[in-house]
Image (cartoon, rainbow, N blue to C red):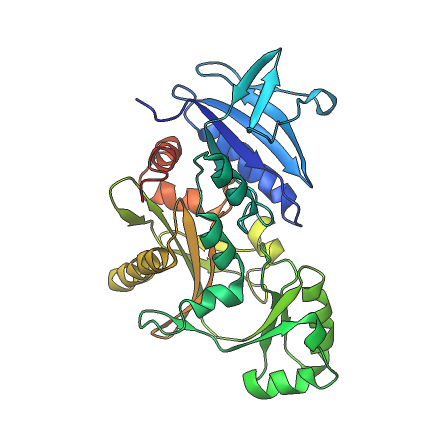
Length: 341
């Protein structure tokens, strides 16, 4: 017996990641169990929310042309199709970036009392900001955080680059604190590159972070709550010829994503346990992916992704497959265990 009848998958966003969000949302909607739920796909961007497609239980998907898409009634999170009103009773949020990953969408749903798939509005806000999130983890004994310098736009001065480089050394990274998919992230290898890197990062956000470069292997691991316990999926190692795991490496095939990672079992277990601890410490819900740098024996925290990519080629589906799980069953577990943790 399912807890919910009508699942609204929300995708699109107000950020540079909106197209990736659509791909993630469409894939997620296609894998939600059509024998258990009615599935509605909502395209939401800059305040305009419309029904892009829907699939009734045990029926085929109906795709709606752009000019004929009903608008979502935000007063009660509903839609009218052929004169019949449907109020969604669960939201699966697949918006990368704002408003789906920074707590705004979660706050809206919380005020309406509608359950959803991701972290709470507060936790989403905390984890979306890389600097704030790191501050929750700086003093724990199970993961390290690279040294960094937090910068607001008004704090940029002619000598900022020299001060930051003196503290962090070269190379270093400059990134927006609240971005995703590596938009606005620049690896600075020479002092003369710093000012342009700052401008690039500020083009994606109002606050930025200069972060010490940690040499090592890029590792990622996802965690979710299955209704009984917090479960860490198999660990992935990301190998790329690029300077780092940038947009091209992520989405255009310029990386090798090895799952399970070719690391000793004891190390994989340690990383999984660390991921579970981070999930619990931050108060996460739903599916969360944690990214790391493994430098020698030291594990450095990079960031938490509370709305991780969910296309057929994304990291979390690869972990699910490596765990021997069916994607539809996995999504059902996420949906049915929402709000229980």
